[in-house]
Image (cartoon, rainbow, N blue to C red; front, top):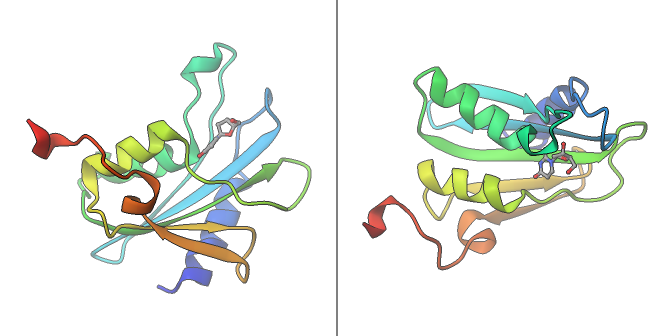
Amino acid sequence: MNNSELIKLALEAREKSYSPYSHFAVGAALLCKNSKVFTGCNIENSGYSATNCAERTAIFKAVSEGETEFEKIAVVGGNADEKPSGFCPPCGICRQVMKEFCGNDFKIIIAKNENEYKSVTLEDLLPLSFDKRDF
Ligand code: THU
């Protein structure tokens, strides 16, 4: 699956965002190495710290279905009333969750739309990181 196709799925997932507090809607689409795709949206909570980001929703859905080998993830986010106008890089907690399952070459496609995106690696977003191989 190419980057534009994955971004389209992330945009569709974003429509499911439950974000009544921030009104910032995020969608993600995670491509597994076996070509399966899992999507996710952010899910907020009145106890704000219970909020789950779109990226972690997608990753946790995949892991809970037995998939732990991932190739890339597309992420789109922005004001819920509009199409994304800027880039939405993954938060620090999501980067650490990616690190648990993905190698440094895992790709994060940070997109505004199917045509405007940046592709970076996990190593770019989380250099000198702590992971399970460190203990
Ligand atoms: N959010 C994500 O879903 N992914 C990110 O990488 C950044 C932030 C969500 C969390 C919260 O629901 C809203 O965006 C505003 O922070």
